[in-house]
Amino acid sequence: MKMILWLAGTLVIAGFLSCCGARCTKRILVKIKWIHGSAGCATSTDCAIQVIKINKSTFILRQNKCINYEAPFMFLLIGNKKAIIMDTGATEDEQTFSLFTTVNSLLQHCKASSGPIELIVAHTRAHSDHVGGDN
Image (cartoon, rainbow, N blue to C red; front, side, top):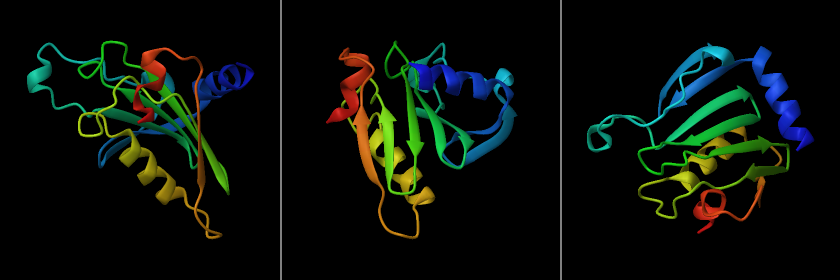
C-alpha cells in the first residue's frame, strides 16, 4: 500500500506519455483523459488497454470500460532484471484484452542489455477484476 501511495503522490507532479497503440501524447497527470468507455461500445475506437508511461520503467495500464465495467488499473514496474505487474485486469480473452501482448511489448522496449526481464505477477486481491488476465 505504501508503494501505491508513493506512486500516486509522484504522479501528480510528473509529466508522462499517454498511449493508445502507436498514438502517444505528452501530458500532465491532472489533465489525463482516462478511457471511460463510450455511449456505443460497439462503435468505440478506444484501445482495449490505455497505457500511461510515467518514466522509462513505470507504467499505468487501464482496461477499457467497454470490455469490462470495472475498468481496472494495473501497474507495471520494470527493473534491470525483473518486472512486476500489480493485477491482471478482468478479462481472460487475449483477443479482446491483449494484456500479455501489451506487457511483453513494454518489457521488450525496456529490455536491459544483460538479457530478458523476468515478470512477476502479483495481485492486490483475488477479485475477478484483479486476476482475470492471469490465463
